[in-house]
Image 1: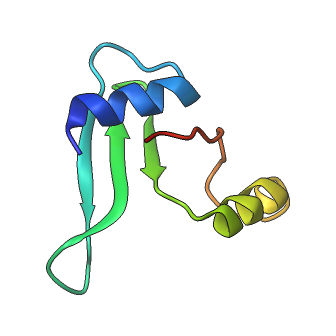
Image 2 (image 1 turned 60 degrees about the vertical axis):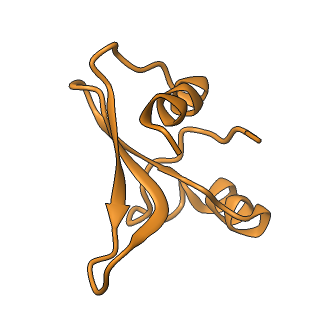
Length: 79
């Protein structure tokens, strides 16, 4: 997916600065990339991730209860 498309998707969840950049998140243990991208807009760093409906339900239910989970800003459908 193109960085401009990723930033457009992320911008629907949380406003980003014009300086925002997206890069794929590489596997640590092997070659390749997760279905996730690091977004850095100079004011904050975020993770944009493709999630299954079940995974999304878990994030929505637990994001305020478990401090180790990243802050959940929202979800958007994109096709």
